[in-house]
Length: 248
Image (cartoon, rainbow, N blue to C red; front, top):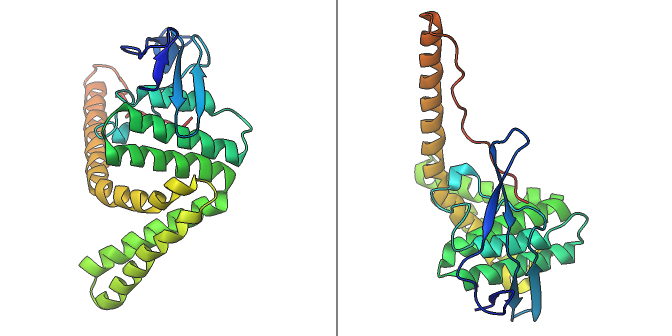
């Protein structure tokens, strides 16, 4: 296994300490207590994660997706390696290489074939493409929306379903064009659009249910707080849903 501790043996676990904010509350960031390294045999490179280096937020997963991909787990080592590699003012080539190492580290961490590709695609599109090629980032998003719009029209639309189906098939085939995107390694780029499209299709309905449910619960809490205030119990603002976490 290419994850090794300071003694050159696979670590039983990565030792972390959760940091606190200035107000004493626990933050979303952690300190690595013991150094470890990841050896990427494909790229013939080694990444050393130092002890007490830059804090890490582990996997930068929005709270809406914690049911699918937790912020920590088998992928923690890979996420910390990626946090170590990603710094300010990186070139596109450096970002692509970092994402590729991240993917290889994910593959080494356990057998989660689709989720690993989904995590890599999210980083490759949502971070590397967004920062180094914003026009491609927007085009990629438009391509996804147009494809699923055509699919929904084919299934639920009124007329011209056959035309919508042809559009959907054409847009699906056009996903091959992203195999040549310069913001992902060539051997991985062929997965990028198709994994993203599959992710949108699989997650759209559950996310819609979660957003509506969280909104309804929050409104109920606000209503209860208003009633409490009106009856002399004092005003207490309900806890709001956790904010979306930004990818590092």
